Picture 1 (cartoon, one colour):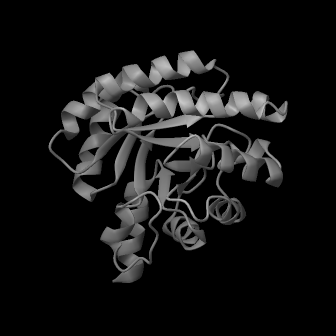
Picture 2 (cartoon, one colour; picture 1 turned 90 degrees about the horizontal axis):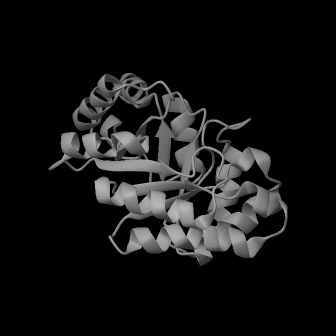
Length: 234
């Protein structure tokens, strides 16, 4: 599914293609990552999202499948200098990452330093796009006013990002329908997609986010969501 593409859910298989099957718990083990990748292949998820040390393993396990390997940069606080985020992204891409979810510099945004926020995103975008790797920008919406959410989405568009994403899942709040609607409107007219993540745990949660305009869903309960969709649709 393209970053800006949205649509209706016609069957349980279609929702799987929206899902980034996510495992970002600090205590995640190699065994957990192997299980995640097996589930992603079985259910046909869009991607798995793992911590950087597991990118190489996930890439090996998912090689030759349609499932992409995603990892995080500047996670979960975003409080890294642009050069460090760019280096982290470069290493992840070298290890086999096909998508990068990068956290903005929240403090810089709240300080009114838009150029630093832009440069922070752009450094990662430049590294990734050289290798055809997608970039999703995590705005951590629960820390921002509506005006700041719109501003950040526009900065991400200006920097060439492929998606804007609601949350890390580690902040004080997760994805909301209202934020997805706001973010979708903020990137209107561009090819930038919207990823809803944080607190999306059920089929009904996911369906509401997609209906609001989300084109990706980040969740650790992807298997449960697909199984629930089977029961509701059939």
